[in-house]
Structures are given as C-alpha cells and as structure tokens.
Image (cartoon, rainbow, N blue to C red; front, side, top):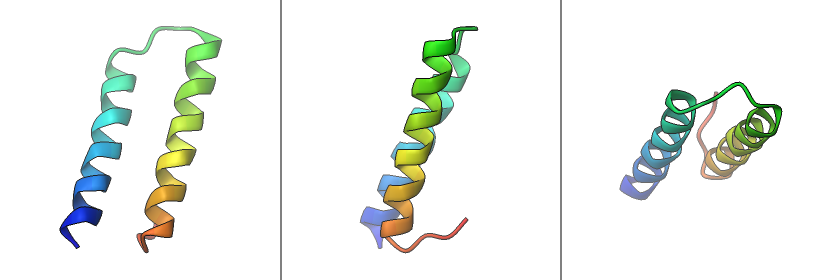
Amino acid sequence: ASLLVSAGCYALGTVGYRVATFHDCEDAARELQSQIQEARADLARRGMRF
C-alpha cells in the first residue's frame, strides 16, 4: 500500500514540477500529456481510480 502511495506522490510531484516549469512549447505540451497518460495508466494498473 505504501508503494502505491509513493508511486502516486512521485507521479503527482513530477507532473506538478513539469507544469510549474512549463513554457509555451508544443513539444513540451505533447511530452507532458504523454507523461500524464503514463502516470494514469501506471496508477490504474495499481488499482487507483480517477
């Protein structure tokens, strides 16, 4: 259970950092969307629902 929480916190922290340092760039926007999808898929595999 703590591994799931740790993974979730890491994913949210990474996304938060990327949003905070985000510049208006199409490539960066696509990369961020990709990372969000990967994080959601990983958390879904671990049983977390959105």
